[in-house]
Length: 131
Image (tube, rainbow, N blue to C red):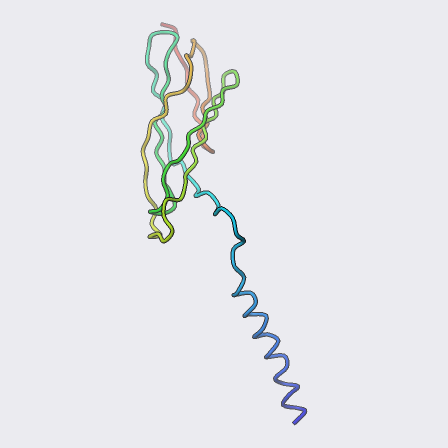
């Protein structure tokens, strides 16, 4: 009899460990923001000098319940960082990658020179030519 209990103990412990791991729930609070993946960016320059610059952004959202939420810009010298964030707009979602296509007019005017724009993790150099 003691031998059967000895064999059951490791199996019982393993089952309890697996059950405890499966029962762990996500901590309460806001869910993480969906990841916006940038596929490509193109820079459109409108003359005259100083120029207005628009960035054409194409990418994907992780599921059918995600949507573009905020677009922020930060300019430091010849570099412009654009951050695109998404939000979750539903609870139960179809897990399909959803393409998006948007334009972002960069703040301010751009004098003749070389610049870099970064959208999330994708960079593109551009040059504003002399008029």
